Length: 320
Image (tube, rainbow, N blue to C red):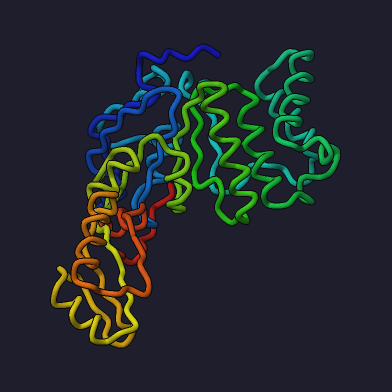
């Protein structure tokens, strides 16, 4: 597989998609470098799955231009399909076939020569830790094993770009972390580009080189996880006191964001860096204020998500 790192793996300009009067995507621009993980975040109904369907040629955009692996999605969809793999929210695994038979089927569909087919199936079973279960029906697999098999089947065609549409939904924490290791390995070891949609914010934080937030059909922010966290701010320090007099004096001495008189806690604005924390501790020391508990909160992707999208009621995203 030859990957040209000089051109974007995926690019989109002014992409629009509507169903009747309902605009799902409204002027989407993307530029995703090859050999990276890109995560698209957004509430239910924001348009994430629609964007995957457009880029993977499953549906057509109403307007705009898109290129995947150097190929125009509208003018050369066959070339796009040959360069991509798609693992959706629901597994494409045939439960009646064994894991090995599912992989052989994909090898046949990709017209691999017989020798290469055997080698490819054996390699994927080994890489995805499915050797012991290779002869068992896929219907007997656990959720994590089924997801690993689904992704292994996607790799049979050696795609340059893989779309992972909420790939770890429903998995237990251990299986989710295993999938993260596999996904990151595809990028670092093989230079594959991953387009990831997820509602697990920790997943995006761990995996993505760049993140975009989609809200009501528009991209409301793009950047690295750290850039997005700095953008929304919201860092603070929580101080808890046991002495009501010290609590009252601290509330009058410090710049307080909020207070809880029942628990004797104060929230103080802070960037969370060493300099600002040292300055706060010095002020407490000079004022002889004894703090019983000290907690630092730095912005995370939860803060980013809710700052950019609020907490809207989920809207049903059209699927056509």
